[in-house]
Length: 567
Image 1 (cartoon, helix red, strand yellow):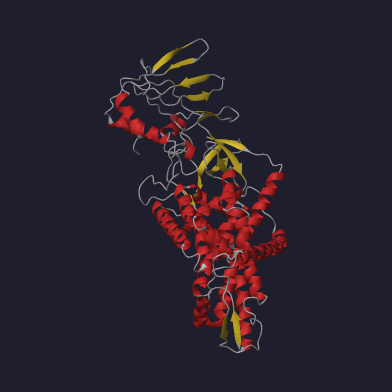
Image 2 (image 1 turned 30 degrees about the vertical axis):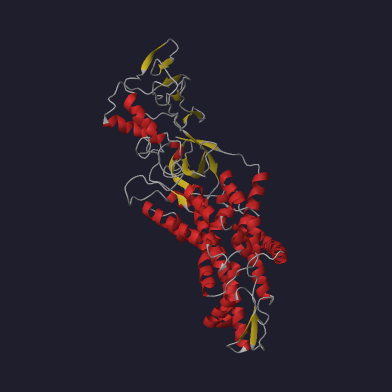
């Protein structure tokens, strides 16, 4: 990785301006460190402040963080602070401060430039993959994705509510959602919001009445069963389909799925006024990728980014989170620990017979991310890095930008469609809904009940980006009210009438109704409406009830927060 512009300038001028002098040691074993000296400092001196924190862990695993500091600056000299001093604590409690030892070097030397580039990468201010998905290593190299897959599948920051409790809450959710939808739709009708609330079309039945009623009932029951099955088996869908799809093993596939999901998100937003259900499903398929797909790298720039991949920094050589793994013979400094908080989740036994656990890496307080790692805790209490669990894609700037361009810019059209406007029953609505339900139900069940509760930034995604609970009530109300109106004969009064020879249908655009009738008759209209209703029911139930349940348990839980130091 190329050095930063400031660092490149410093390399060409710092050779004659800096040199390290080691101080004498006194009777107490103290070591004095002198940094490189420069004399006349003027007002144009540039300073380079490093961003990664160096921890010190003593016998009890405590971690202290110290950033490198630059002090005075001036205009005639360009100077750079020498690398961070590292604090280590020994058995006797003596503290030695060791500055980087370097003699005068030739600024044109390629080895010196490589070293400076490596240190610059390790001390970068911008987090890895903060703006876009970065690649480190060879093209086609397999990424360490197993920890990310396991994290999505098994992390449990709070206990999950029981199935019985979910069954009890579901009717309450249904009632409140329908009530909200009725109020929203009445408000939109009274204020004459632009859009089509529904045009009535009268059509002839193509099948005998009794047969058609039986087929209508079968459509409602079978498609409802399909949706509930997707919800019940969402864990298997996650493990076998979505984890490999949204968090692929190679960088090339990562980029490919990102481009595809970005295209779906932005493209769908332009059809919200023409065919709302498929367009909304496309938007939330992209959003499901953003919250359940995780960014992984083959390696990271330093210990502050080990949630993305093992560190390749020379400063971390010998630690368990380095790309080469632990290496005691290289002189591991026990002070280079990474502070983390353990998360709940049932895992298997680790490589060394210890307990495998998820841990949230505590980065800079202002870092916006949910980085996590997989660690093994030995019976003695030592904590060893076993792999990265990645970072949710939603914390990448490119994903946030696509979310803004798609959902953000088209929010009014989205809300209008949520009131039952701009519907278009037919083949497109049916097929897109069938594809979306396993994806959306899985992503929002995983995030709403588990992954979205792992840290404050994940919870902010729910509260801010999803406008919780307003958007979820809009969508949940749309789904519950649509199915309720279909079954109660509001959309199709003759749906259960075996004696009717004609029927009226008043959901959506008349042109869509006529086109669907030409392809599949009354059956297609019933099937399309049924599955379109289920698109928004259980996914928003997960977001509403899952998040509310999790927050309640976190507020009243007395469980002690467990902190560890990863060496």
